[in-house]
Amino acid sequence: MKTHLTLSQRIHNAEGIQAAEYLHARHTYLHATSYCKEEWGEFWDTSEEASWGHLFGVMCGFDEVWYNSVTNYDPDGYRGFINLAKQHPEISWFDARSMREISMHTLATDIIEAADDGKTVRASFLTPGVLMFAFNANHHYRGLTLWERYGSDFIYDEDEGQWLYLHEQVCPDMGGPMDVCNPGMDAYNKLMGIGGAPGGKGPGPGPGAGGGPGAGGPPQGMGGAPGAGGPQGGPPPQGMGGAPQGAPGGPGEQRGADGNAQVPGMKIKTKGATRGATSAGGAKGEVHVGVPGPIHFNYTPIMHVQNTVAWPEPYKTMDRENTYRIYETPEVD
Amino acid sequence: MRKQYYSDDERIIRVWDVEEVKDLMARRQVLNMNNERRKELDTLWVTEPKYRKTASMGSNWGYYVGMDEISNYYVVQYTDRLQKALDEKCAANPGLRNIRDNFGYGDLIAHHVSTPCVVLAGDGKTAKGVWYSLGVRSLGKPDGSCEAKWYPERICADFVKEDSGDWKIWHLLISLDVEYEAGTNLGDVETFTGAPTEAQKEFGEPTLPYVVHNPDYGWSDGYPTVPPVAYYSYDPAEGYGPEGRPRWHKGHPNYRKENG
Image (cartoon, rainbow over all chains, first blue to last red; front, side, top):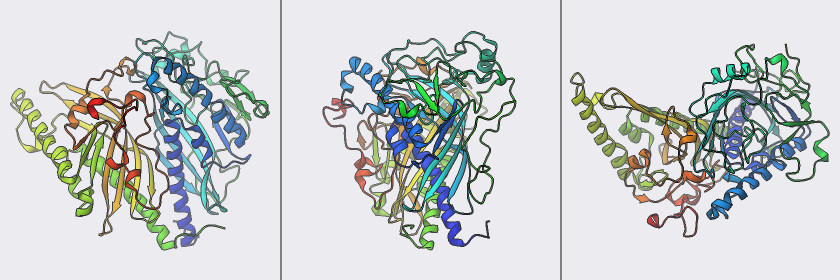
């Protein structure tokens, strides 16, 4: 009951807990609409402490987050849109940004704690998500499922009297093509380097509406080659949802030179690269991280149980023991 | 310095109000699942005349407006369909009694909601929210088989706090992204077919029939507008009722002459 806090403090913390749920949901819907500027520009802490992580590493500081998630995101969407507009002139004055896929990472199973000092809130979620591509040149849908976990920290801006996003760690576990995947068998096949997982007859790639990153913008794609017309890690074209280029082996073998054997083809640059990149779209698909991965692993049948974003315990103040920010690449057994 | 707009009493009421609204939507989905549609309308929807008149239930193809219209579509017509389906099931299965308790025999309809994004008006009188549902319907057939489909959809709603102090559903809008058979590859499902889906047929003839959302273009038509953001008082033009979605104007890619 936190009876050591005053009623007013508890009310403030209750507001913070609701804000965490609301801000994460708002983030989710903006992401599904591909409104990256709003997703990242309206309610994030813009300091060097801000971070966004995925299995391939952690973007550190708001500049790096923005570069990966906005600067390097919109151009891919526009490229796909222009390709589609050649076939569908009626869309020329549509909102180009939201022509992309609907990356709907639904939020469920939330566990949220507010710090006793009222300055931060921590939240974990499980997300059974879907990524649907409605508008494709071949006039067929494309779709993926994607199960992930989130660890999210929020901070209270006392000057503005509002809660802001501070840290996010995304941990994808499994997924595959809708509605024909068997995530367990797909993972086994991937491990063993056996053929392609179910994906059915593909209608052909077509230009696509830009392909798309997953939760939060940066590369996502579960075990597929980047989609034609899509950016790095975007869901693969139908029929390519199975094993990608080679089997990655067990967790211990996955830390390649680029720290990212799980997202084939992704280019990673570590700290310092962000500020040097200036050309919009010039660094297509290149992801900049301050802390290289792997942070988490996609499911395989020979892995230990992972608890990468453990639920938040009651805490007094945010510190290194109570945060979803990862400051160094973790050791992996 | 924190901008203090509300007293502690007001703040905790606002926190509680948001929880009440989420609870209301969850109850709505469970009653829908259990075929308790009359109970849903009677207990969860607006009761005061000023709101009953403007209440609406919308989907991709238009809106039913007013509680009488909503009730006729959502309860009366639906009950007729349930009766017809039960007649067919009883004819094929003499062991099944043709009684009201067997309505929906062999059906599972689950539009569970997730990802709640609820905003309470600054004046505390209304709220709006959006949820996402990975809905599923499995409908039993007379021969004992069934047909299961996925219904991924946004469920958007305006809520109002009536004079009694109770929160009620005022406008409901179900924005379907795609309807397709479970177990099939979504990549095999065509877009731009122009053929009415089962959901469209089931939606019948709404009070205001026109394209509210065309999923062939994904979410690019910008409606329903999500997520809801902070607002002070209710504005119908920004709501999830029909006034929030003007008809597609001529020239818009989603405009269709037949819906004009």
